[in-house]
Length: 341
Ligand SMILES: Cc1cc2nc3c(=O)[nH]c(=O)nc-3n(C[C@H](O)[C@H](O)[C@H](O)COP(=O)(O)O)c2cc1C
Image: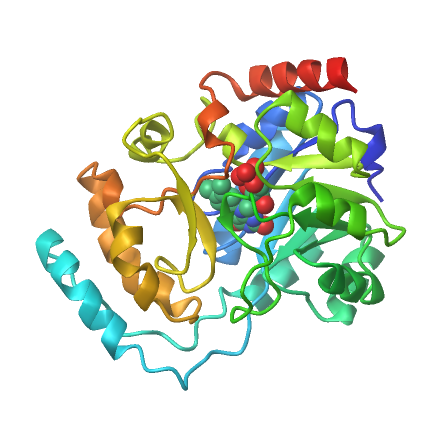
């Protein structure tokens, strides 16, 4: 089991699906003394295995892989009204809004099998908990199992299911909230308060809104063993975030973030754009089918370099995010944090 308190730098680079946390980023963070994570979400097992091979060729020490835990599809919800709402934007880009695919479980089973074979040092789960027998199989194979939680209740359930460690995600976090049910409204208790509430006897990695040394120092002071940063790395040289996303994080036109289901059906924090303003109120809690419906629009917007129709995932600390090598970001944040501890 990985002892997170023994990492040279207790900074975990968040798994970021959609091509952001690519092997080069995992390598850079590992070389700076932190722990990097690959994101398995949206990938088939073989594509994820290729990334694992690439990391193994570059990193000697531990690294992690993250998976989305699927839920039974909400086939009872009618998506026709939302499809119609999206139609004018799709037409503008000359793309079609697809029919929902209710069989999409993100290839969870094939990825679990592959990761068990690969004996990954750390495996983390988001959007829910795998069955206890899956957790047990990973532990038996030597993987450290981390379950992402957003409430004290989810934390207790993860401990009971046999998790080695928790990733406690606060409401400040960029990207998807890891509520264990897609229909749950995400909590608003701040990360630091959550850390104080969740005392379950296993190590806690804190996530959400941390982009300064002071944020990191506060999370560690509140009981976290390590911190997990996503947004802080989005503009780094090694990040695979799309250029319009990187640019938007520093664009004074975007003055706020919002938690919205508009892009995927699950609550997620993004820069407040015209897309968020236009579709937030109409978006049903149906994941990943809303992700499928909006994907062609987002792809076309990315190709056109139009940030307003992209999912510009961002935590509340996005204003402090800098460019440059990820190793420099780790080093600078940790130096600031140490000074404040
Ligand atoms: C672009 C982006 C993609 C993300 N993708 C994932 C993911 O695939 N799996 C996951 O567990 N968390 C994902 N997250 C959430 C992070 O794990 C973490 O909770 C979050 O980044 C912490 O907040 P911060 O972004 O303010 O640092 C993502 C976050 C961002 C910003």
